[in-house]
Image 1 (cartoon, rainbow, N blue to C red):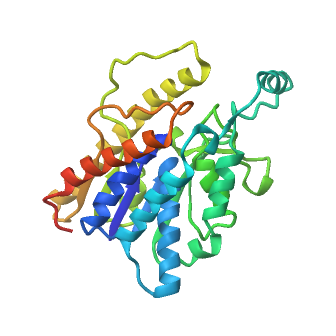
Image 2 (image 1 turned 60 degrees about the horizontal axis):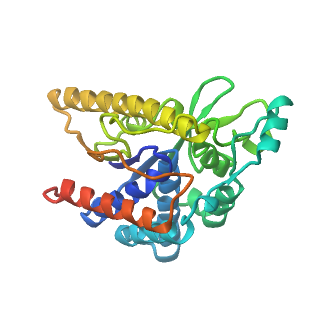
Length: 301
């Protein structure tokens, strides 16, 4: 069973899109796709398009899906306002004082974009398995949702909701639980894929192995939160990958053949979520494609 595992990375997920194109062009055809945060968005889009092709043609063209994913990013994610709107200082102040803080950003544009491009019926009938991870911040549990779960798109929205920056998601409006980015606990859901029986895995991580010494404007609240998130995510994704590599090595020693390929950048990806253009998105996609192509050029799936 082949699994594509897409880690979190916020808007750096554009890099992930380029790597995915390289992997699918190289012949990797996943039976299962797992995603966290932006990886959950990319995973859901791919499985949706695979389902649509299967319903219409009884066939799946993975390289075409990768091109469609790139087109989705280039057309729809061209500036910060395409994803979220900054709440006014007055609104933030009042909401904070009244104990009704709901994130620094209004994510209505992102939620609208997701619901416009993903259909729950198509996802549910796709032949490709899909899991998206989110965290219930009330009880701390990591939850993996599938298209068979009711209100699946709410979980996709939750998986992409960055803590503090974006509002928690209440599944079907229920207030007893609130969900945020799965990256709070898992960034690269490799363990979930292996536990589900994956034997050949391509994992795309958006973060380098090490955090580099780079200037940070820690007096800007959003940039400070983003930097803190990057440091935390870096540690978690390293742990996720190390666990998986150790597991695969042990299983191979036992005679069970498992293959794990992790593709991640060597230097930190640079993208200012408060000030980016379509050119920045294209730059990361191209970089991802180059890195993915180089990593997989001698691989035969």
